[in-house]
Length: 233
Image 1: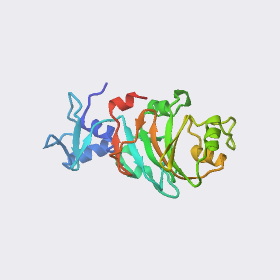
Image 2 (image 1 turned 90 degrees about the vertical axis):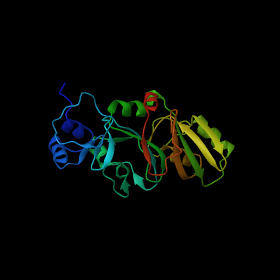
Image 3 (image 1 turned 30 degrees about the vertical axis):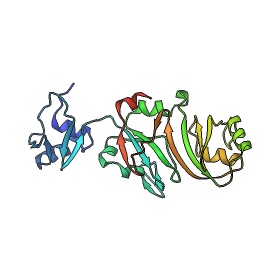
Image 4 (image 1 turned 120 degrees about the horizontal axis):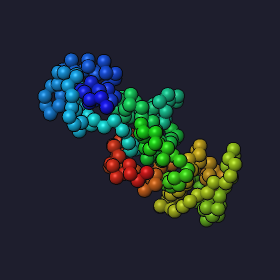
C-alpha cells in the first residue's frame, strides 16, 4: 500500500487532485499542530485526526457518514432544477469526495437526511430487505379520523404500484400525526394520506431505524455520524 503522503492525504479528503494538493502546500496554506507544512511529499507514520487548510481545521476522514437537518425548498440532487441543492449546505470538498444522499426528501419536505460516499452503507439503509422503519411527522388539512387510521394500517393501493402499502405504526402528537413506513416510494406518505381522503400540509422525517434527528441541529445544520450510529445500520 502506498505511503500516506501529505499530497495523498489532502487529495483523499477532497482538496482536488494531488497536483492541486501540492499547490496548496507550496502556497503555505497547510498546517499541522500550528506548524506550516512545506513538503507535499512528507510521509505520515499515522494519519492525523485533523489538518488545517487555509485556516480551517478539517477532519481527515475519507469515509463520510453525515446527518443533515434538511430544510424546505432544497433538492436532494447535485443538479437541482427549481431550488438550491442540499449539497450547497455541505463543504465543497464533500462533493469532490463523492457524497450522495441516502434516499431523498422532496423540496416540500424537511427533516432527517443521511448522506454518505460509501456505497455499502447507502445500500444497507435504502434496502427494503433491511426493514428499517422511517418515521414522519405530518400535519393534515382535515381531521384525521379513526377510519383513516384503520385504512392506512390495513393497507392502501397507490396509483402505479403493484401491491398495497401499509402504515407500520401511527400515533398522534397534538395536532400532528406520526406515521412509520418501511418503504421509500415516490411521495409515499403524501400519497397514502391522499388515498384515504386527506392531504398532507407539512411533512418532517424524524427518524430512520433507531436513529433520530439530532434536536441540536437547526435547519440546514449537519454533523458526522458517530461510529455507534453508523454501526446501527
